[in-house]
Image (cartoon, rainbow, N blue to C red; front, top):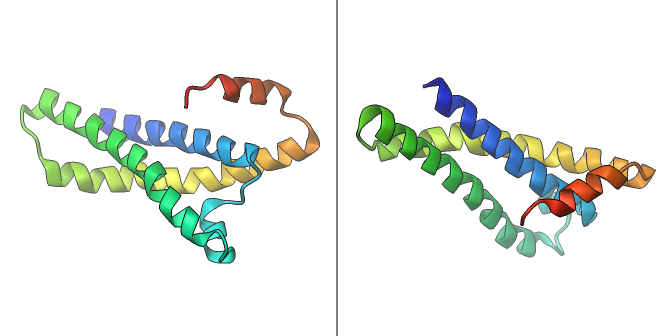
Length: 124
């Protein structure tokens, strides 16, 4: 049980950090705030958002299904979907915006030579 409650938030956090770094590098405002405050880009953002969230959701469900097959020798799809939302999507949404804001400040201060190099090496 602890395996899936630890692995999914970690996977979601890594995907959120990656998305936050990408947003910061492109000087985008925090996703949620941009939807509320930028009516010009709102439609594009609402189309882009499900793509990012889908990645996190699929990873979380796959992790849970693998766990269920190994431990229970059965699949409980409803449980997997509910737990994926609670344990993966919530951390993703909570981490992406703050990472974006923190990294934008670092970019403005010119402190990101090492982190920029590392993030460019990450696969897309």
